[in-house]
Figure 1 (tube, helix red, strand yellow):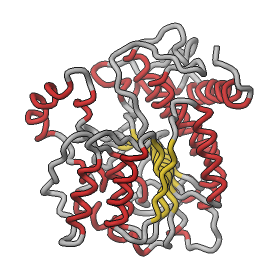
Figure 2 (figure 1 turned 135 degrees about the horizontal axis):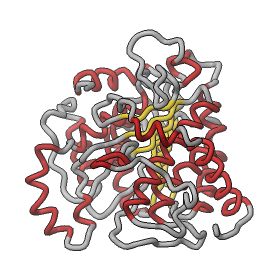
Figure 3 (figure 1 turned 60 degrees about the vertical axis):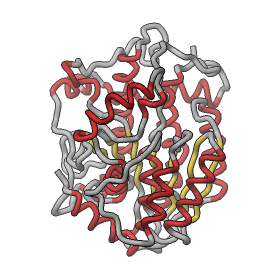
Length: 379
């Protein structure tokens, strides 16, 4: 476990990097009570440094994206932070909190619904028109549902889009800007941050006896959808797509991060959620990660040299994580909530051995071609 003191010490060094780091947070999930956390942290920031061992009580739904964005604002100089989501009023409040934490921060809200890939393309084009480089792409989009397949106008399941297709589309669209950040000759190597973080769960398909397999005959789950299978496919396909990206883009690192249970208040968004939250939250609190701590830990995952790109990691000495393919510093990392990488898993190795990386990439590129380039509904 990477202890919290080490994470705080690392994050405190980020101000020494070049100013003006560019970060994209998609999707920025804010609901009715999300900004209480930001407001409280902003008020405290003028009184004392963060003491994350005394977690701040949070009311309602906040989120990992918000807590990480606020941590980034706290620990960097003049960051340019793009927040992508649907609620303008909620984002306005969060931006005000961010400016209170760090008056030099430059937050921008881009309003869109990224359950449609065409909207992902549009918002990425807007970012590309404003920026020459992006240092960090941090993604947490999700869809809390108990219903079955919910197909969008593009022919894809909404939950599957938010957990996989939209995230991978963000990556492919913003790779030129990420690569530009990685190869900025005007900066020393320590300041050339270029990283993608996708927060979900790289190991969900093998938890509780899961098989860790993919249905290669129906990767989009058009015919065999279930919520469980969707969770498995989104996780595994994300694992292998990120691995492929790390091999092809040697100067950018890719992290698939498991947040564990985080006190975001998400139970309140389910049917009868307020009752569930009132009953379960006191029971779960001792084993959950406080939201402030989660933000600091995810900022560490997003910036630490422990997870280097392949071009640098292969020859690095010291504390370098083992990549998802089992090689030290190989550019793609499946990271647990505590900063440690997950150990090799025989079930996932068997699936990888079925040409999973190649099949997932081929399928994803086919979806993007039909939906994004040809404007068709995916069959």
